[in-house]
Image 1: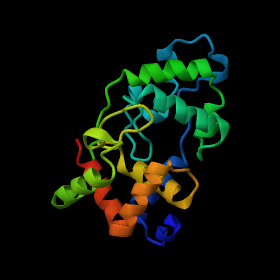
Image 2 (image 1 turned 90 degrees about the horizontal axis):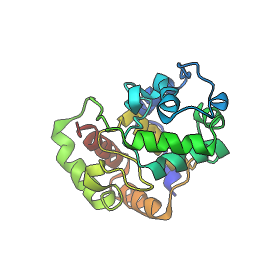
Image 3 (image 1 turned 135 degrees about the vertical axis):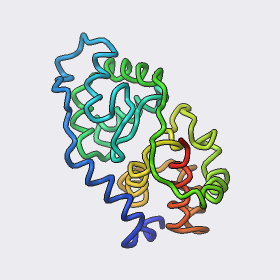
Image 4 (image 1 turned 60 degrees about the vertical axis):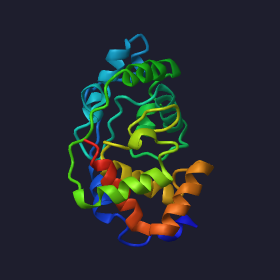
Length: 209
């Protein structure tokens, strides 16, 4: 059971940073998506800038950059937020305000934007170990050191690691459902390296700048 690894202290410093940062999120633009049906893709995207940064390049470690994500991944994620399948702090409420057409427009817009890798601290001494773990457990789906945005996979390399850590917490606790292939890989990683393996992976992704 993956839940056995959720002992006190699991990635605590990173996760706490991510979760506390989420508590104050607001839609800073003030736009109301439910009355923006005729809006262009760029106008819709601007309604996300208050949290996710200009053109989806986030400046805050608790909030992911969404520029450069694949259209499929963006649509699936927003649809799951909207239905309540995906746990959220505020995104479930925000997603419910957008129509399927608006979500498709935003997906196409953000997928065309360049992904800006986060400037964050990392330990250069353990990058090689993290790279080896990524190659063994993650590379098959998250290609090019986790930097590729393909189909239903998100970007890991260069993404904010506090966000990634909080997301892994959701996966490990069962709040967010893993695919079978992801569960198999994560179970193998945790059996082999435990919490330290996750920390090494996150450090490797942070180094992708």
